[in-house]
Length: 105
Image 1 (tube, rainbow, N blue to C red):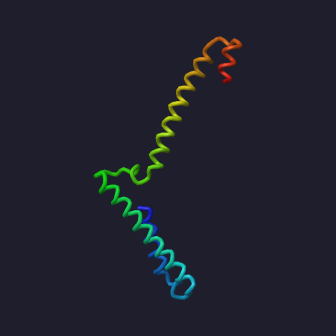
Image 2: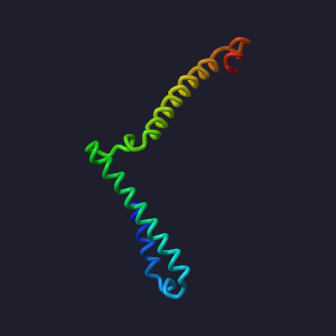
Image 3: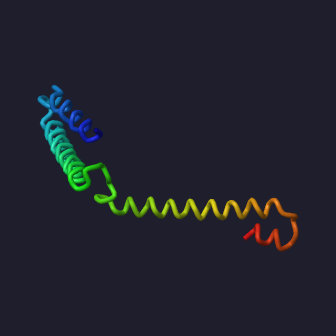
């Protein structure tokens, strides 16, 4: 949807009367329009490829680094929750030297 909107914006700019008056502006807008159409085409190819391969929308096959980042985040979140429960356990205990040392750790 984003690239479709960009194509619409570039098309609207091309129809601006200023393009007729300023050749340099027309050249710039034409280059922008071409780039947005290429981007939209590329995006559509990727979306179609994902649909064809899986029969469902799954970006992990196209962007494997995204899948790895999600896994790392999930692992980090689990580690955080485990350590947070340890901290809460030590906070509930009597404040002695060893408990404070472990809490600080």
